[in-house]
Structures are given as C-alpha cells and as structure tokens.
Image (cartoon, rainbow, N blue to C red):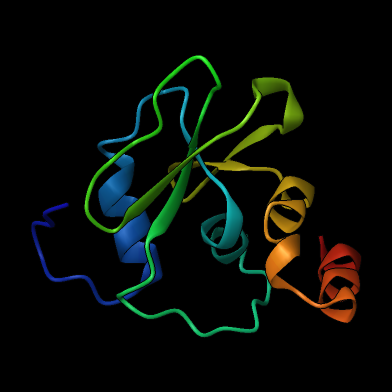
Length: 112
C-alpha cells in the first residue's frame, strides 16, 4: 500500500487504505478496536497489519500490511469512522477475543 505522504500512525494507515477498500469490506479485529479508540493491550506499531473483512462470497484482500478475513455480512453492523467502514464495537471485541484475557474482554465490553 503506497501513501502519498509518510504515515505517522494507525489513523493515517487506516485512511490511506480506505481508498482501496471495496464497498463491502470493513475493518475488523485489532484494526476495528483501534478505529473505535478502544483499548488494546498491545501498542500499535507500523508492522501490525490492518485487518480487513470481506463477505463470505468475496475474496478477502491480499496485499502488504493487510490481513484479509471473511465475515458473514449479517454478523456485524457497519459503521463509518473517519471515513472508513468498520464493524460495530461488539463485533470488534468478539473478533479479538482469542487474543485477550477474560478480564480484558470484560473491560472492552463495558466500554463498547
């Protein structure tokens, strides 16, 4: 993914990639949590890929610094945050639950 100007953080990367997203795609997982500005126990680094979900009947994106996933369309509501399609906060939490402790999930659920 090429940016017109150097990225300075997650929001820059998110907005740069948004121009390449198909209308049916949306951020999920860590990327969705960060878009919602919910706490995640691991600090963002430029090495972290964006997590982008495509509907089950489409191929997920395959490009540098992007982790493509599939998600049934009805499993999450789409919101637009800073011009980018993102799954709802609950779907963001559930899509990262395997990476979190039970306490961290509870904290996120009370904030979403």
